[in-house]
Length: 223
Image 1 (cartoon, rainbow, N blue to C red):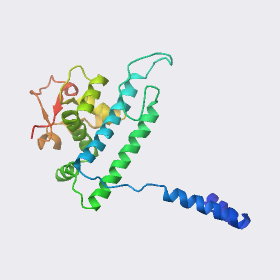
Image 2: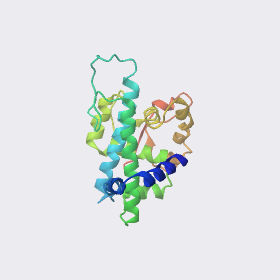
Image 3: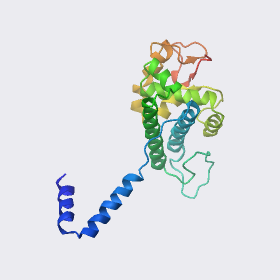
Image 4: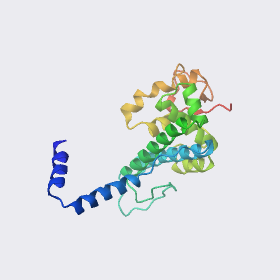
């Protein structure tokens, strides 16, 4: 803290008045050009913003899986992700994801303050979903209802089959940074977890002691 304070004092003592004015003007211009988060106009706009957030989750997972060991001159198929291209690095995709995520959370807060009712936020609040549960529902909602997201998810080839659900193993890989975190979050998909116990997600077929839970596909119920 001392460094910046001393530096500012030095500027004020030794700089010419015109230089000080220019610095103040430049700083003011930066402040004026920093956009304030705007509320979502309606639920459709909010869902489109969530779709972009979910898509960037796909992008990060795809780059983690498919860039390892590739030669620089090797050509390969790259899905049509927004905000990045085939030359993008994982860190760039992660930066874009964080930017989109932060912007969405800020706009949701502003929307709530302005009295705009966002159905997805109301749903998550009603069922007291935490961050991980919210993200599971968001991904499954996009996989169920957003054609562009569905097509892009298929292009990523995270799973062999197609459908409007996702395998639990895929959801964990999309939402967790590594194996340790995936193991810690498996409890969310237990039968006593809030997602299943409240019928917020469902699974086809029965599960027994021989079932690999990671290969099981979960869906949003029709209701």
